[in-house]
Image (tube, rainbow, N blue to C red; front, side, top):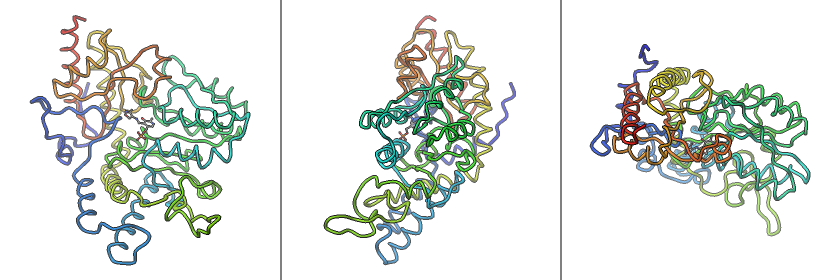
Length: 412
Ligand code: 7TS
């Protein structure tokens, strides 16, 4: 297969200082970006610049530093909104996707979900798109139902539509699975769910970092993503929603800056999105996320996606030649994100990950916070290689060599 790259990976790798380090004396082959992505120097510099030049709290002080920090924080919000085709008033900064789903659980769910309601999610979800709804269902006397999957790792749309006939209050699903890589037809799913009267939430943790996303076109009521998987810092992410929907919701946390006026017996709320950002916010990491977005935009998200599709195609072809290799998820690289979950014979994924680590190769092994999916796959765990812009064909070749080595150690 022709190994042409959609982006100049070798040039781009120089932007990521961590990729220069060695692990066990070997070149670091980082294949765990679905867990968290590496950071380019521009993001690290943005953090250092904030702390060394204009560190100050936001939205409160009229001094120069305070105004500079506020401006940078709000500029980051505008970038984070624009990146997914939204507007700044509809973007709440949160810690990440997990906090976003929990915010919806508290601020929307407590008010809108009633006894006897049905909530729908799917069998391929990350725990952060399951457990908040379990908690909500338990509190309210509602029922959480799961749309099933087809053998190729896509959502069983007939089952999904059957569940919609029960007029669910909320329908929540991933844009892209962190295990199977499946890219769901979120446009169609949102349209169908909305037609059934449901509010929709799309988990964009594995899509926003890797492909162009337009939340308006998708038609999701809520859309969540994490900054750290898209070359940004940890501790920052976004919940995107229509302004009117946010206005209609109760606050998430109470405290400073989320209020308009506080009396002894009650308080009134600030405008959205500030109503949902109580206390001192994560200023530095929001600014760092803005720098990550600039970096990705300079490459172009179409190109990022094209790069990963080519790499994924090469990986599926190359790795399938390793003895005992069995991967999960759709076989068509166009229908999946840049993750390859697999098992190698009966080698335990943790043992495999340890052997690969000796070779400087970082993959993730385990249940990937998707235990219902592991049960559906009938496995306790999988190994997972996942890509981002800095991965090359060489990285895939290194992984193949690592799998061959493990195969000979375990006599596959
Ligand atoms: N949703 C999906 C699809 C994810 O992959 C993850 C994190 C989350 C939600 C939660 O994101 P967080 O930023 O709030 O933690 N996924 C993974 C993973 O696959 N390995 O480590 C974290």
